[in-house]
Image (cartoon, rainbow, N blue to C red; front, side, top):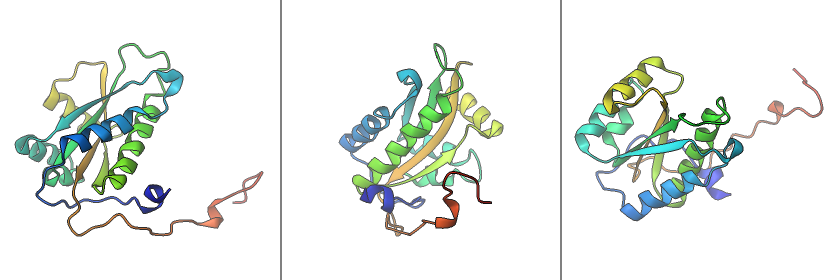
Length: 169
């Protein structure tokens, strides 16, 4: 549970590569996520090349952490043979959360950068990676060893946001 409570968005990274075994563990964690009908629509592009990372960092004003990361994953949905067409964003959200939590376990920093709700960002990735129409960009996650920021507990619990049996607004 400490990974859940300690996870924070880390946007600054040391100039230090992430080891291949840790990258593999992050991807394995992602693929352990639940998915609708077990369709597992996720696929991942692992980007470590500095020029490509810098290009990802120019995708939006909020994607700059990718340029400074050791590695950034591009999460995409392969929608070619989905049985549950509308659930892929939830499936990929679960995969992303597993990556973020595993990053804390591995003493890495990570930040989720959304794409799926931003048409310009989607088009940027489609152009950058030459995706066919059945590949849907979902998000980026920049990863690396934290530079200054830390994964540490901040209490976010707000009892006024909890309702029992009915809406109390």
